[in-house]
Amino acid sequence: MEQLRTIGRELAMGSQGGWGQSKEFLDLVKSIGEARSKAEEDRIIARELEHLKRRLADPDVPRRKMKELLLRLVYAEMLGHDASFGHIHAVKMTHDESLPLKRTGYLAVALFLDERHDLVILVVNTIQKDLRSDNYLVVCAALTAACRLIGEEAIPAVLPQVAELLAHPKEAVRKKAVMALHRFYQRSPSSVSHLVSNFRKVQFSPLSIYFDKIHAFLIIVTIAE
Image 1 (cartoon, helix red, strand yellow):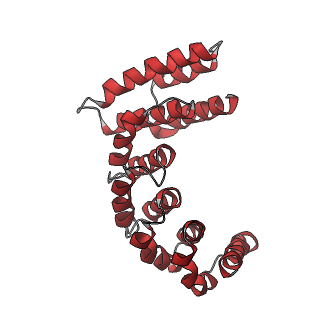
Image 2 (cartoon, rainbow, N blue to C red; image 1 turned 120 degrees about the vertical axis):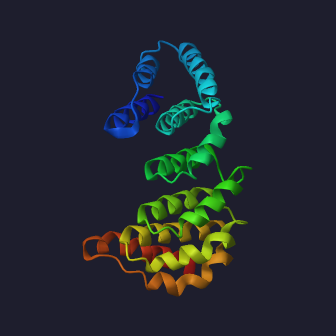
């Protein structure tokens, strides 16, 4: 529980760096940290969720404020409370053209959903689109989400694009593509085993060769077994 409170404080501190900090969010984190019992904490979160439900239902909520509301939902679920009423708003935020908002949307859906959730099909379509983005940060966000949300049935929909990203000019993208393919292999070995030769061609910078290339090699060995 203390670890979750610490994460909440970090989210609040992160908002000071441009995530759209509000006093009410900081007060929420403080009040939970000062709760004297689990029952008191539950009452605080229950009030927060009712407040968030009303705010999310408001069509005039600014996009930047919506970002903070989603982070507050994430915090509530981290503490074990049901915030499923807000999951669709996280999915919608993955569609946003703003990179900070899109990344927040992907963060939220990766925490809210798993590969079996009914809303994942909507995220898969966005991941497919973002894997083709000219902005490598958008591509990285989509690959991170793919590791969490792409299940066995959805692998064929994104596999060709992820495989192509092994040759992306940005090393960060190549790393995440390797991670995504490794995750796909764990879920469906037969879907990825034919790509072993592609793994062998992945190149990393000299500064990371002792860690990242070894990691890629270990993944190759796992797939080849």
